[in-house]
Image 1 (cartoon, rainbow over the protein chains, first blue to last red):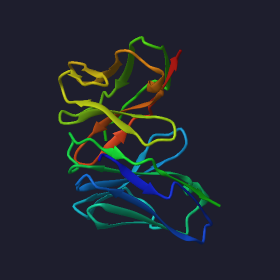
Image 2 (cartoon, chains in turn red, cyan):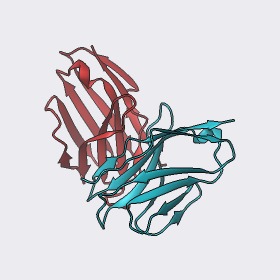
Image 3 (tube, rainbow over the protein chains, first blue to last red):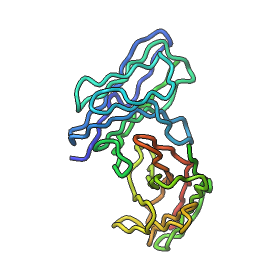
Image 4 (cartoon, chains in turn brown, green):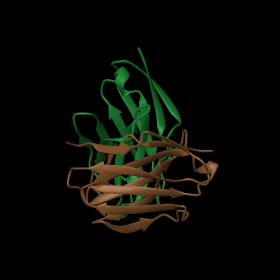
Length: 114
Length: 109
């Protein structure tokens, strides 16, 4: 099974709401990633977890809060977002985050902030 | 961080070979070159990767210039299902995926 699943597929939220995005993989991968992708742009790395510890935070605003409860799950908690945060949020995983690893991406959650 | 440059778009006829170029003039000696593609409404998917030598797999071939400042992804026989955005990515250090701007490939029937 080489699937990364993401829920929900679509999310609409107001600027005062709190919501969470969920990502799951069962490939035994120890590195998990959150990316943000605006329309017609490449994905931009937000966070990396390695062995359930936050390894990289690419200067992401604190209104985005990642969490890795176990090696198969990755959450992204959202609070007080701005309309410019509307984008496709992609989750990915890889074996250990090495330069030869293949990253497996989920289909993404399309977020709209009103 | 090293960057990649790709043409915005390319067209190909079905069942003909496609050569997708990527420039990465600031690549360092230990950076790996990966290619991913993103079909409409999907997450990116792995195509191929290499370091110095040319590489082949069931999906494509990767030709890397001797000085490593450029590379070319080769699809041997394009099909309609190959229409996608192709990203050339340098893996610079652990975890650091630096996506290029991508080439939108259109395949004509």
